[in-house]
Image (tube, rainbow, N blue to C red; front, top):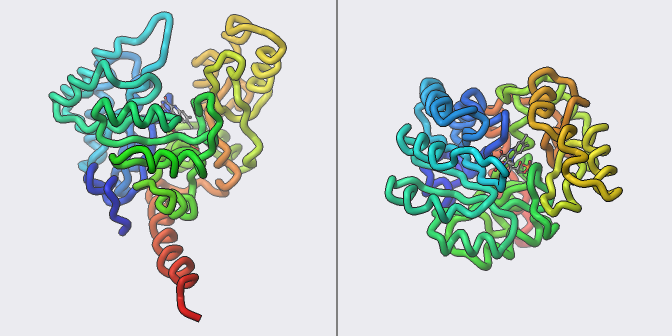
Length: 325
Ligand SMILES: Cc1cc2nc3c(=O)[nH]c(=O)nc-3n(C[C@H](O)[C@H](O)[C@H](O)COP(=O)(O)O)c2cc1C
């Protein structure tokens, strides 16, 4: 067992979280993560309405009696989803842990605090981690440049970002982006984090509700098989490399605007990749960590392997290095 401030704060067995994942963070995966002793997050906006989110929370509870949370991703939008209603559905369902991401959670903090909810805010820079701590969040998850999804615009990889953030904040912190095995967990702990958050690695597990072809592609892919789309728009997202993501990069780097790629990046097309396994139907998020993903284990196998190997790594390999000669 690896006990950290993270495991103590959230009442879980292992210092491992599964971050929110659009279309993927549903009951099957989150319950499997909870049952493995790690902390899983349902993704609020994967559900079409706040009522559907409440039903998904209830469905997850039927599959686990362990703690789990809900991710609320707050992104700028012309026609934003009803964030307040999603937030209220989380609270009314009795969930006590929320992962916020995207915009800072200032607007929602008083309501969460009043409801006794613990908030872990995911961000991509030291200054945003400091701001989140000042806003009263309970923990921070810091996403390095390696991560799937939105790495921000600073391009600071975890090897520097994690210790820099650890030096700047006092609340518990998860290292995120590029983690997939025991070596990463031990490194994160050495860098000053209290655990790891993973997305891509959990996407390639048996319980992940995406098509088998997507999982197999991730095993085949190397660390070089991602694209950074929307860079010129300063809304960078790291996605798997395919004909669609490469086309989006080409259009935007050639001076195109969002309107020119809107159809290519449509959420419905990305969903088709996950549901039907048509790998060239649209864009889908995946990180550099694909380079160290070599199998499709069950969630329980994955979490157990990471924790067991991490313990051995610390007790044998690292402790051995300090042994007197
Ligand atoms: C398919 C997929 C969808 C994601 N969707 C979201 C999302 O909706 N909200 C969010 O906060 N993070 C999202 N993420 C990011 C993850 O929660 C996590 O921060 C990231 O994957 C960590 O990097 P890693 O993939 O290298 O482990 C997504 C990641 C993946 C792989």
